[in-house]
Length: 357
Image 1 (cartoon, rainbow, N blue to C red):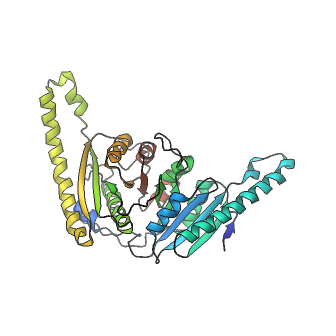
Image 2: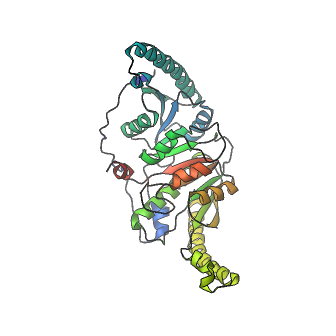
Image 3: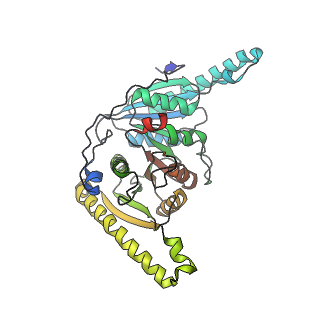
C-alpha cells in the first residue's frame, strides 16, 4: 500500500557516516582500502524516484539489475501541487481535482514499477516540487543511492539537462544515478573518472572523494555483473598554452617533447593504480584498462567517455564554487549536458553540510 505524505520536515537529522574510514599515507591505499557506507552485497537503501512525466522504462529495468534481496528499495512517486500556483479561488477546486487525478495515475505507475523490480518495495507518494521532495526523502530515509530518469530522457540530443537532474546533482547529499537509457546489457561497460592525486588542491578531501568514486564504481560494476572497468583520467598541463605560444621559442617538436614528459609522469601513477586495482579485484572477475586524455572541463570528459561508449560513467562532485578540477565546480552538470550515457555522481561524506552552510 502506498503511503502518501503532503509535507516533509525541512529539519535534517544528523546524517552520520556510519562506517570507519581508514586513510593511509599513499593515494593508492586510500582509493583501494577506503570503506564506504554502500558496500556490495550488504543492505543498501535505494530510492527509485518517478514523477508524472516519466515513462519508467529505464528506471524499472535499471532497478531490477541494481537491486538484490538484501536492499531496502523505495519507489518514490512525486506529483505536482498545482493549486499552490493559483490565486483565483474559483479555480483552486478544479486544480485540486487535477492534482488528485495526477496522484491517482502516479499511484498506478508506482505500484506497477514496484512489481517489476522483483522484490518487496516500499511505495511512497508525495506532492510538491520534484527535486525538493526527492532530496527530503533521501535525507529522511538516509538513502545510499537515488535513481532518477533524466527529465530529458526522451531527447537524446546532447547539450540538454533537465531541471530536476540539475538540482539533484547540485543539492542531493546521496550518490545519484541519472538515467539516460536502461541498463540492460548483460555485461555493461563501466567507466570511472579518476582524479589526479598529485594536485594538492583541496588536499585529503579531494583524495577521499576520489576514493569514494572508485569504490562506488567498483560496487556498481559488481551489482551489474560487469567484467571490465575502464579507468579514465583527464590530465592537464597548466603551461601548455604558453609552450604553444610563438614567444616560447619552442618548435612543434619541442612542445610535443614537453607533453610526452608530462604524460609519462601521469602515466606512471595511473598505471600503478590500475595494477593495484587488478591485484585486488581480479580474483572477483574484474579486469581494468586505462585511458588518458589531455584537456580539461566537463565537455572533454564527456567526449572522452562517449568514445568508450559506456553504459555507466562514474564521477564525483562536491559542487564547490570557484574551484576548478575534475570533481569540483559544475563538472558533473557539464558532463550530463554533453555525455550521452547514464551518469553516477558520487558525493563526499559531508556534502550536505557543504550545500546547507
